[in-house]
Length: 253
Ligand code: SAM
Image 1: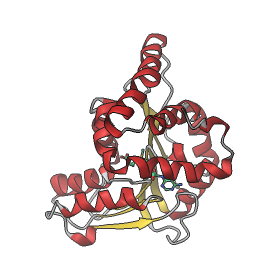
Image 2 (image 1 turned 180 degrees about the vertical axis):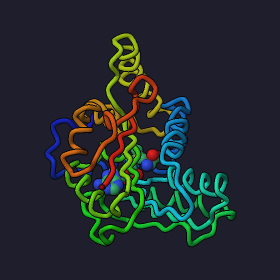
Image 3 (image 1 turned 30 degrees about the vertical axis):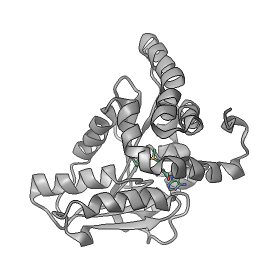
């Protein structure tokens, strides 16, 4: 049986999303690789290279989960600039996901410990974070799970410094009809089975597939980013792998 998330009232969405990630936290990294055939790593690498952070960059990684973006960011700063002054705060609503992230960071002693901090928090209300305090804000595969996207964008705008950059990596809509039908078949038929086999949790992955389908198109989302005050360059996004994912970006000018 499925949760039937589609008919769930908004007020319950947060609780349900919490349960989903609670159920999958420990299997999360393995599941990402299995479901995306490893491609999510390329999308995340691409995000960091597009960001091209300079020395001393302060990054807020919201819905940071187990820390792929935060880790990629610090590795980039170290490898490209030999920089160990860059800082990242990993914020997530789910303490279990952050716990997995902490474990990962504790196994990479080459990072100066003051470079990464962890905080439990909600993307829709970052009241613990001062305005105008970060150079870059990232949210990867997280905004789709939030109830009020406009509140998330409003908070992102607030905490960024003037000149700061908002970057969102999220699933998108595939335009090509052939690719789209293969992708739909894969998402609806195969992903829940992988979820069942690896995480013994078909419902959570059923939900993830459904949430991807309900998220706005690339154009609509770019419009929402602009409506929140950001300035976009060109279309404001880049399709990745036929639009299966998209990287949106906006500047606080
Ligand atoms: N950014 C990580 C990555 O790309 O691997 C994790 C992505 S995971 C699919 C989504 C994350 O969003 C989960 O860790 C979940 O706990 C978090 N999340 C969901 N709703 C949230 C909210 N309202 N505020 C902050 N984090 C949230």
